Image 1 (cartoon, rainbow, N blue to C red):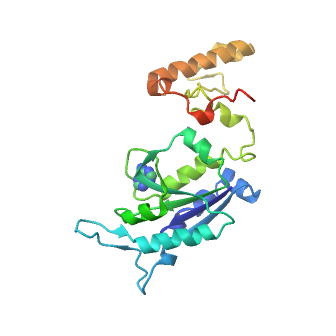
Image 2: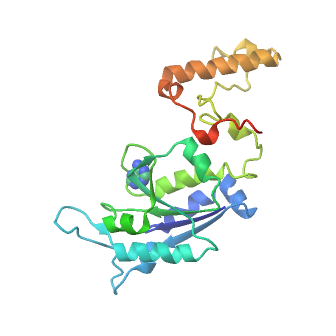
Image 3: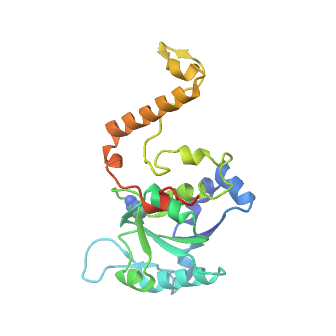
Length: 240
Ligand code: ADE
């Protein structure tokens, strides 16, 4: 799977990209991540990528010419154009169903904003899908782009050591429940003990306990998940 990231701060990414799971996926050729500096498409000797908003107001706005030409040039670098995602708090809130859908794409192009936003004509011309990672405002789209890459990459076949492990994650599968509690050694620590059932060796009983745990946790912390229709992409396929 190929990612292209357009950003004014490509130097924010290498530390994150070097972390073990992602680095391994890149080394094994499962994932390719190309970073592009939007400034490379700026005009004039000052390499200005933004300007004051028409009509006045605070802050700076990313220029339409620079961004459109940058995205078009990057799209032309691949065999086929990728799905264009723009990271912005104005976007549709990312969830696991959308992550699953994105993981089936061959190529994603992520456009990160800074400053007060993008010239509206960037939206009109490029028609990107707008994605938000939550209802709060970050200083720019870079951290949000890393979140998208991180969540998507772990669903690319072969990236996770244990293929089944992400299916057991919170939010995966048709039934969107939070994870059950996990324990490892020691069996007792400062008076806190591991639930007896997990030491019993009775696997049907353990499975039931875990399911009930997940359900209770979800009801207590995220009741909204229980009242939601499972998204189409994750409904069990009756033919498989
Ligand atoms: N850029 C700034 N805030 C953001 C958010 N919450 N999600 C995605 N991109 C952003």
